[in-house]
Length: 240
Length: 281
Image (cartoon, rainbow over all chains, first blue to last red):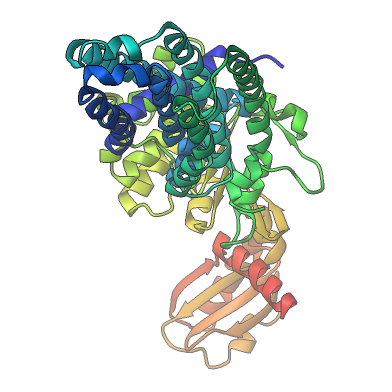
């Protein structure tokens, strides 16, 4: 069964156009990164140079991997439930689009902005730390393996989060409820990330590779599993 | 144009959704646009049909053009610019293409939904209650557009509970009330359900109507239908009406009108739906 790039692109483009006009969504996507950047920034900028040695034992920057977990789920959770609420789902499903094409278009439209936001916030954070933190703090904070982990895990976590959000959305009749449930489901991975960042769970190369492989598998399976959860009949009639 | 009539809850929308492959049939069989209605043929069927649901379901934050661009791509139409332009012209919205759908009236939204349904040049167009909730002017505009489509040779499957709409637009109708009650041309249904009747109105009541009407050719029965009004059951109005006229004149009656009673589609509908109700009671 082949996937029509044009139909996927149609959903992707439509979604991006809708985001542009959806102020509440933009605000929702902006608030979380702000929370993630402001609190640690205040903490880091307030550190004295003598605090740099304990920082060397932690992976504080990994804390920011919470952004690619939490931001996309807000968008993804309203992807199907929102359309259903607005009555736009039925017309779309009367076209030749297949459910996996529909969901892929939705997922890509949530993925790219989330990725852009996560990387941008991370970059801004690093620049501010380099410019304004005490001498030695930036050196202690910014380390090659952490940077690599950030670059690698951001898309993997975002994709996982999107499939979770869409899966919740396919089973929910209310977009806001779907967002809340999606955020709730995203808490466990955020906790894991924070525990690694605070060195409660020791970050090792093996752990990183294992997590990356697991996420990659989950991301690929996520598309297929979510497609199966997408019950056209239930979504149109609101029954079953 | 095929009309699918029935009261609320009769199953009209469910039938359209089933034929449009949105719902799986629980039993029976159907062929849509030449394809048997099976899950494997879903995409092929949806390529060849378009459905305008009862609610337009437009992306209200997007412009008319953006809505149509999205659906042109979903149908993978060739030369989408031209198709969008043609669809907008067909519904007289070419000059409103940049308007956000959220700013449009209900009638205009229905027109956009119709334009969207025309994008793929469907072989079969399903219109589910296309004028529900519209004011008479907007409803008439939608009727004109639908008639225009019929003239262009588009096969239209129209569901409605507005009988005057079906009477005006449809070549054939089916009447549904959870099960199919009847199907045919409106004239055929009238003939099946009702005998031909001739109504007679005179200035004053006839003193002996039985002597006037009895024994006239093609007149099977008669009865009074109010003062100075008579209803005659006839087998052939072309024979009966001249005979009745002559008899009335011969009886010295002051005739106000003689005419064949036209049963409307509403009469047919009510007869069948009432029968169903009586059957249930």
